[in-house]
Image (cartoon, rainbow, N blue to C red):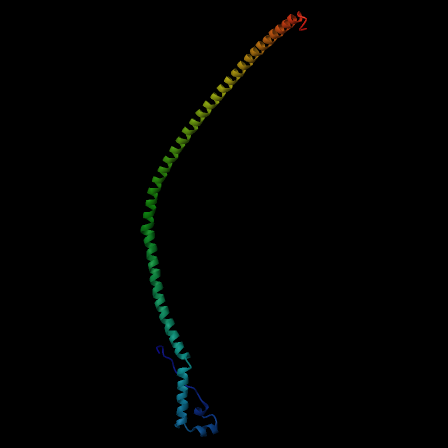
Length: 189
């Protein structure tokens, strides 16, 4: 594997010569048992002990990642710096000028619209005032006509009442005279 690592051989008592009886039973350093133990140690370190390899791979990965990331971040930061410079030097002044030009036009249009609305409101107020004045005058005229009508009705009523009273008196006199005429005849009396 890349990154390399040193293999740590498994130290065994038989290989290092820890006990007298074991040394006798396993044999000497060149004996087949010693070679088998040595091979078992190598197999064990390669198959089961991955720390050196993993540490080497980890160091390699971190080194590559930091180098690539550092370059990528430098490029990103450089691009951001260029974009900010471009924005500050070119885009922002252009936008500001365009905004000022368009804002002045918008303000002029807004002022014209406001003036038009004010004129329309003034005309509407004048129309409403004229209409209200006309309604008030018309109402006063109707009130006067009604009062005249009521006075006329009152005087006509007085005339009708007077005519009715006179007619009633005439009828009373006529009936009184008829009664006197009938009283002359004994059969009706």
